[in-house]
Length: 468
Image (cartoon, rainbow, N blue to C red; front, side):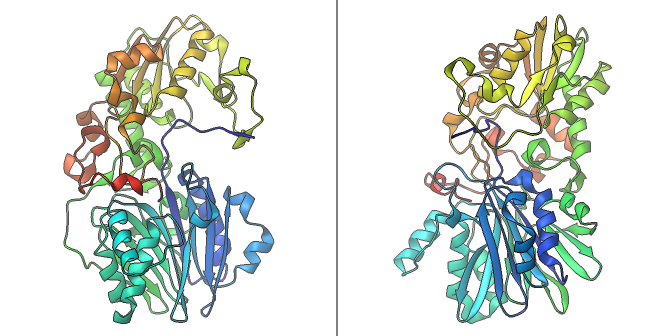
């Protein structure tokens, strides 16, 4: 079997938890279903009935992993769920989360979204002290730190452990009787709180709250640790306030458009990105504006409205494509592209087309899609991109961890235009991107665009940046 690897960027994980509901496992199943876009390699749910932890973890998609029988077997009123994306070499069941340890007669599990840039350093130190690791995940590091400090009591041990971490983390911890949400002081990844009757819910994105009809309470603040137990919800902020560094790529690509993150609705931000592109790169003679669905849809809509041009779905997506395909023959080299998206010939033939894309990372898939547009007879093919060029690797939880993977690192914009076979190519400026979010540079991480990393990264950080 041949597994198709998408050329789009991948975000590593999504977390979802419930406290105080008799159907905690089922609600978590639905929540993970809503967060499936954040990770498609593995998923897991751990529940607690107040005395024991029950778990189900497996490789694959949420609906393929959990059966009705599984959900009935996951007993308890507390649940911790996780979806994960991993790269080749780390896509194994042992790295699926939530990750569980048993210590001093008690169970503890964790789900993690993000990436710890000092994980290798901490792991090396812990191994010298006698710790034995079961996985290659950086998430396991915090569990070893927690176990070593547990004599302080759970809360103090957790704060002490988190204080040693550097990088991006939205953690969801669970013991037999407590659910804990923690977000790094920079606030790289989104995390929110909700309520469903008397129960509390924690999720990576608000779209997961909507699916179970939970009420959005607020976002977990950067540097905040929230404890949820039989006494209700309690919050502490044990860390020194630091400059926020929300991942701006959540707005561009990762988060679902119906989610509310970092104080704004993703849909609105993406439409404003498109409108800003129309101002920076107008094409008044174009016949139509179209996206490469689905991630470019909302920026394309914003561009078309701002430019006064027709918005058309010039490519149709096949929504029933699985994750594996029978390997095509050599004379079907673009099969992997055409099986997912196919151009509408009569709409495009003879037309001047403006394609709005959310990002160009490696360029391979974009090149094939542009060629498909050419093949059906487009007169001109222009492209605008709703973010600046990706010139620097990400060390905080996105799967472009080396410069060699980034087409914009090795080529100027005009060279990229030529390689992709375009008549013109325009990237949204950093200033325009920030304008579309109505925020200043200080509130976001822009490292993949400008190389200014808000949390310092040493040369060995890449060792773990693929093992989130």
